[in-house]
Length: 114
Length: 114
Image 1 (cartoon, chains in turn yellow, red):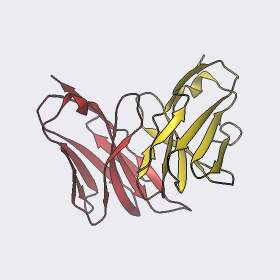
Image 2 (cartoon, rainbow over the protein chains, first blue to last red):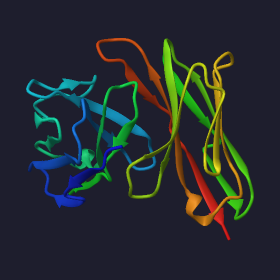
Image 3 (tube, chains in turn purple, blue):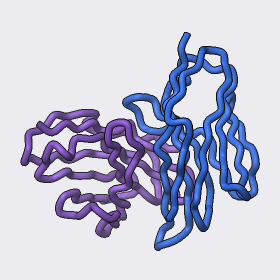
């Protein structure tokens, strides 16, 4: 199994600013993912964080808005850029040995944009 | 179109009672099906993961079933406890694309009352 931590756990940000969320895994994982969860909704995949290369984004999400880094097998960051109130959500990181294997989720970062 | 539908949307039961949550999917090609428990303000935690050939899998008081022919799964909770209050999310893993993908249901929100 893997234990995943995220920082910050929550934040309140002003419109137009950016926030970087950190995700740390306690063991090496092949794949890391970033999700968004709107209140009362299920998870929506933003992108797959690839080590040493550009992230793979899902439809509706772009690199300019959600730049992602993954410098090694245990760490990744997601930046929410030029925020608007519509970006208020919970952002979750997950990791695993592959898409068809067990995935472990972080506790999430609750973002409120005012 | 790959979809995962869960029912009921929400459920209230008394402590000590049993309950069953349903998941229907139209996902192809199928890899596996997972049930996650998500406490409020937390990330999802895996309960079970089942492949095509598995009909039943248990994890303590949680028992998941899978009927790959009818594309249905259920999660049965026995002797419910207050701590079972959470959202239960059905997730199906599909082959396809460069890495495959996970299709999330919207979850069933379970409330266990004393």
